[in-house]
Amino acid sequence: MGTATGIVLCVAIFTLLLRRGLWRVSYTWTVYVACVGFTDALILGWPHTFWTWGFWTSKELLLAILKFAMGLELGALAFRRFPGAQRTARSTAALTPLGVAIIMALAPRTNQGGLAGLALEAHARLSHGSALLLIALGLLVLWYRVPVHRLHRAVLRGLATYLLLFSGGLRTALSLLDTALVAWWNTVSSAAALAYVAMLAYWLWEVWRRVPEDDVRGSAAIEARLAWRERLGEGPGSASP
Image 1: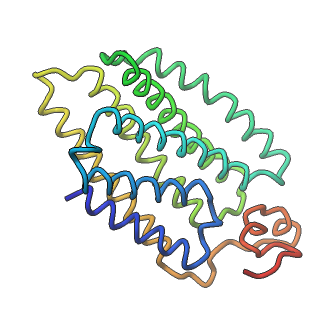
Image 2: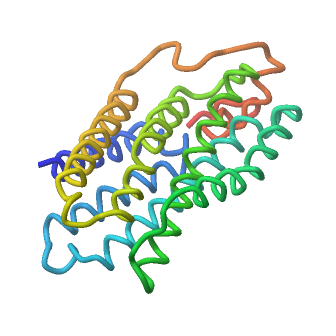
């Protein structure tokens, strides 16, 4: 039921992004939503073919890469034309691997071997890295008071919260899973699935609603520095979409 609900929400988000031209707000976010809906539809529609350990680990690794790329894209759009904030954002991105390394060193290792084990390790590192990067970006936006698109705020809030709460729990469950922990694993999986559906529902609400004062408008000097406005065709000298 949760998978089907997630697919419906992803289709609705993706359709609205295309119809309203909001796919330009974040290319990686649009691709991420499409990939989540498509891969989950494959699993739900053809479970005998796609509900396999190999496909699941490949899917999760792809989504982890997209989440990390999303953080980099949002950071570039928010801070590219603010030199002071940009330097801090770059330093934060550069230090993210160090933070991930510390977390991974303290966390238990997975019991999986071979390519599946490598995929799980890569997924865990990217998930932790994405969570740290998105949280740091959100804090920098608040600290420097940089005007960002409301959908950028929605992505930062929703995905950072989800990753912070559940990426570590998922990895711990996979690394410690045995007969005695099956009930605990089922609880974590159910909670994570519900949280993910809640995140998608929040994104759909933000994409669907129309707000006249959609984004913070500042002085002409500030407006000229907002890279995301130019992408949406709202910047100085940009043609209207």
